[in-house]
Length: 428
Image (cartoon, rainbow, N blue to C red; front, side, top):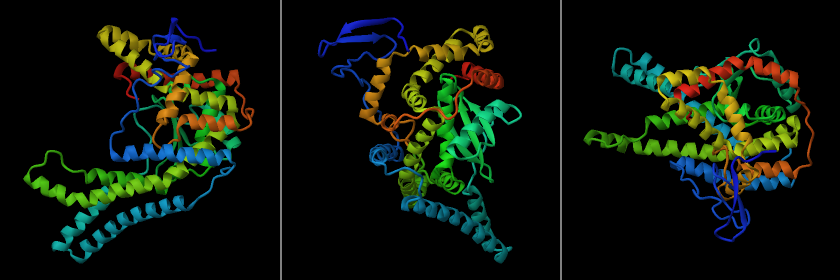
């Protein structure tokens, strides 16, 4: 049971109902929803991000209705997903054409003007080449020999959701977790954000792993090498064709020349986003079901609740880093030496969040369409979908001894990430 610190009671200024209030969180009225969302909807920056959010809300609601009607029970490739794949192949085809044209111009025009054109095309092809994702260099990377118990848990969950385990696990400072394909061979990587991992119960951790690995078992288009690299290529192209700010006379002409290519690339990105979004959100709902299968419905719903208040975890970590920075170099060094205590303070704060703050976040989510990011269905809809199905027990049951062994395997990474947050701040 979560308990609130320094809780008081006061009347609602709107309807007079009693309000339970904790000064650390927004004071609001459960009865009439006074002050439930004082900040209001946040304005998204950029047309692409605004379009993503709007589509995420619209598709999320439609897909929820399909899920509840039994229309989405297994992964499938629809026309949108196939068209997205075709566009991705066309994007890669442009890069191949640039490279082939460059080679032809260099060979046929050797020593003349054609050679210069060929070299330009080859440089363009190299700059716009598909870039497979790479493992982050700034965070700890755990291989099987480093964390056999953690990998064993991942493998057990993977078997439950119908896929194989991962090739490598990275540990970061995000209040999140994710999977991705990296390298030209499309190997699998699991990123565990310690701020999220540390506040979860053992069963919620299993549910988290079930969700992330579920993306591989349900055919999530985003995690395929072809589409993912094409999307990164388009993003790179858009960067090269961004208009120059405060242009001079010559730069104005460059901006005019960039206008049409920039518009085409922006349109392709938005089209690819829209084509992938339905499949992406379907994949999230299916991954949530895998989370429930692996860790239990109760644990999967609890994971959704933590995601609703993830901003509170981020605020706590920023406050810890700011406190260390304000106390001077010596005190900061001492705080860095005791950085492991950061996780205990974070867990204590998150455990003290009162239930009515979770309820407020659910209602705000229903108004705004809160989601982890613009690719996810609104979190309250994901929670509703889990609760609509018959509750399922855990297929993988947490074990206290295994948890202790995993904690030992993560000890060095915990210290590394905590010291970095204290030393450099938290920007997640």
